[in-house]
Length: 110
Length: 264
Image 1 (cartoon, rainbow over the protein chains, first blue to last red):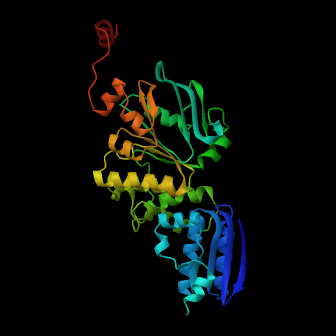
Image 2 (cartoon, rainbow over the protein chains, first blue to last red):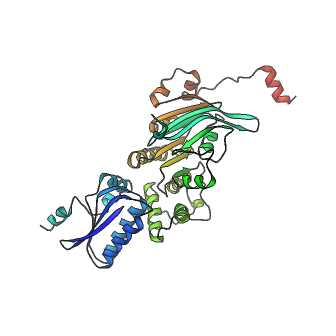
Image 3 (spheres, each protein chain N blue to C red):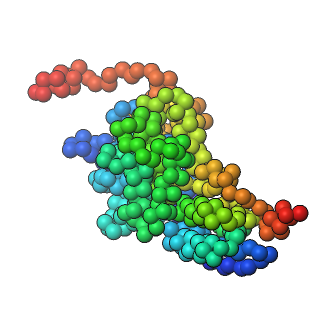
């Protein structure tokens, strides 16, 4: 797994790439929580995720809960098919705000 | 197809309990992401086969390769590592009665990972949600129905996101609706996560609903192995006996029967 955090259009966008499993999900979690700790509205880009295990999904859930507590926006971008099937299994596709891309999210503002 | 394409490859497996031969030259393969159902009547050897696949027993002869590793010759360390890729849902649940359901599901993660507590707790709750036990994490096994215990056992089996899941009689003792829901879940785990699944059962309806392949055992030998259609349409009399629940005549000579009764 690799991750990159970019500032774009007022959001902190955490780009996750490759397999997110037990060995690397703590890193992904930290990048998400760090972004939220800096009071940044945070979007996690999952378009290049080839696999995400439960610990990765739990990190997203924790991130969303943390964001809600801090009254910060949190959402997922471009969820890959591999990641979506895992989210669907736990019915989380109905929980997270999901956008096709950052452009899609920005279009929501009109 | 080469051996690397099989998640499980069993070759000429022979197993004994004392002097009684239980498995007599069993060979089978299970492809990655397949559901294999092992069927057979009582005493056919299916539970013994399962115990060997889990490396809980050592065979008299033959080989068993799980995820590319021969478990009959594997070291204890290798087996320990391999078992982290495998989940087992035992017939009776095998939950620890002194722990809540949530703690039972979290246990493998606490034992085998260094994940943060909050992640372990969320993961355990996610697994319970998947088996429709969301919100029950604080209950103890004694407070659950039989169907709930089976589902909790499955949640624990899935805790480590295993590549392979084994089920021992998942539907036994469940009402038809819960049983059907469990079947749907097994299919969903294969379809969404690509988990390789082995189910030991004698529930025919369930077997034909979920199986990619069915292996029928009888007296420690494979009667037939193939797709559900191949098994359903088999002309082998014993297979049809099992499928149609026909009782079988006692196959023993009068002398042998007398000998067995008198022990003489």
